[in-house]
Image 1 (spheres, one colour):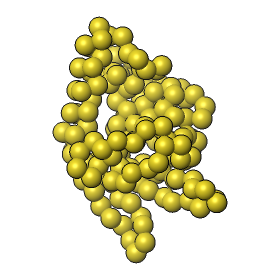
Image 2 (cartoon, rainbow, N blue to C red):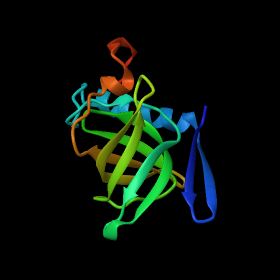
Image 3 (cartoon, rainbow, N blue to C red):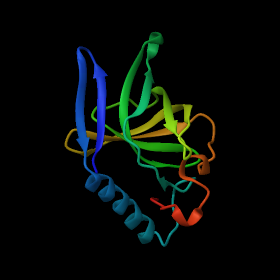
Image 4 (cartoon, rainbow, N blue to C red):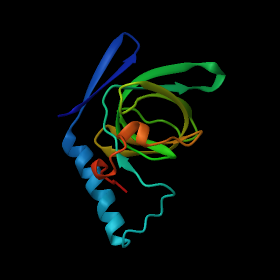
Length: 151
C-alpha cells in the first residue's frame, strides 16, 4: 500500500504517492546501520514503526504565518518522528503535528524540524523533535512484541 500525501497549496490539492517499498528500504537501511554497530544506536531513543498517511503537519512560519500539509509518517520515538513529504523544510522550523494514536484519537504535538534530506527523487525525509517527550505506547500500542524497531 502506498502512502498518499496530499498537500494543500494555492489552488488545490497536489498528490504524491509514497510507495511502501521506499518506507521498507529506509527501515532496512536503519536496521543495517544498527546491526553494524552491534545493536548500539547513536540515537537517544529507540525508533518504532509508525506508518500513517495523511497526517496533518502545520508549519509555523516566522511572522505568524502557517501552512498546512498532509504527510506520511515513518517512525516514532519518545523524542521525535520521521516523516516523508514532497517539500523541503528548513531546520529549526517550528511545527505542530496532529498524530493518530493507537486507539484512533488525534493528538496535537508541538515539534521542531531537526533534519531534512532527500530520500528518493522529490521525496524528503524530515526528522522532527517533539517539544515534550511522548509515551510511544499511546501511538504503537502496549504489546511490545508487535513493535518493530527501526533504529
